[in-house]
Length: 133
Image (cartoon, rainbow, N blue to C red; front, side, top):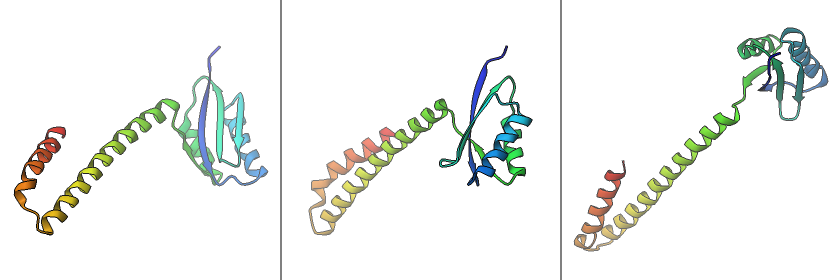
């Protein structure tokens, strides 16, 4: 006997019990799901299927009924996306801090400060920025 796997989808356009019954019928009759969990509030559908399953075929069947469906990311995909997002957020923070410092130095130079005072700071800042890349 094969192992039961859960497949999660977000489905747009489900708003009533008639929509729910149409989606349930597709899952049970065409794809032989052992269990279907449908949440109208969040617009999510979880199918528990034993054996082979073609998610694109399920999405196509729902599209024929007038629903827009998308496969939801798995937990592993979500962790990878969060990791990338965290890395990008750190890079944006560093870029923002550097931009703020450059604006402060520019303001000081514009208001008449001696450039020799800031030449060493700007040289090290440039060195650090280009070594980081």
